[in-house]
Image (tube, rainbow, N blue to C red; front, side, top):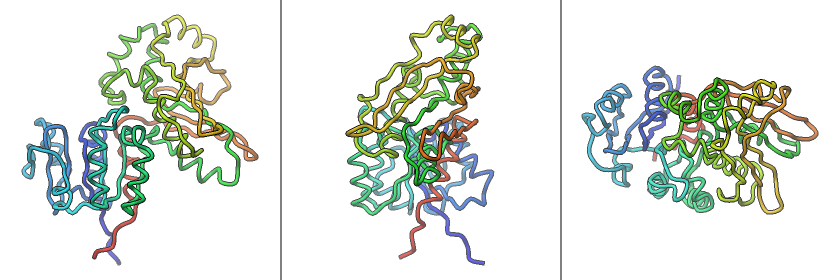
Length: 339
């Protein structure tokens, strides 16, 4: 029997997603993935022979992967990537939608080393879409980012495979788990502030809660999905965005009692020069499949012809489903042949 080649992976970011990925690899040694470098905000650990997920998690419990036996202060740079023998770079750190940093710097370094890149953070895509794709093409690397747009929803994959041969007219989606949970808390009579406090430990929310509450996270996913599916150009600032911060408890409760709960809905459709998108809270009809999604579930309605409308939902959210999407992407890129 031929041995399965293992993907050698370097990763920046060891928060909810990164630690979830390590726990999955610890529980599933059959997965052909070996972590050879992992960085967090205080340092990194690197070993070309591989890093045991359990030891990385133990070091993080003490404060940083830099406390791992192979840990050091500093960041993953070109020398570290070359020394650890990585073939795939996973970017899972919190990054800015304005400039994509610090993840964008890591991604550029990885592409310069001709590594394949898997993104869990949205910043590099949203802030540098055109340059990122140009650099990927120039390097001959492969890029995967299914974890950036409502993981574990296969939003782009479904549109480009299951709908092949049909004309996609528009997409309606719940892309943000946190706002779904917040609105359900408000249905129970809690203020938005109280709701944020209650779900703060769930590992679903963005590091900066404004990104969820004000609709920035959903808008960023509109950019990623819209450009991937419809082509053309669209910047984050072009998304017509309204968050849930202006909703009162009475607004949310009244809608819920009428059978049509309020959800933060993302709408994307093709335009003349690129996709057009709107993010806003909407009271939904009880018959709308998005209305039935609870506990932070995510879903998409694809409105297409002649195939008709199709509905896809995902009932998991947070670090573990996103890490599973990262693993799916890592396994989908090519295994490089030894030189």
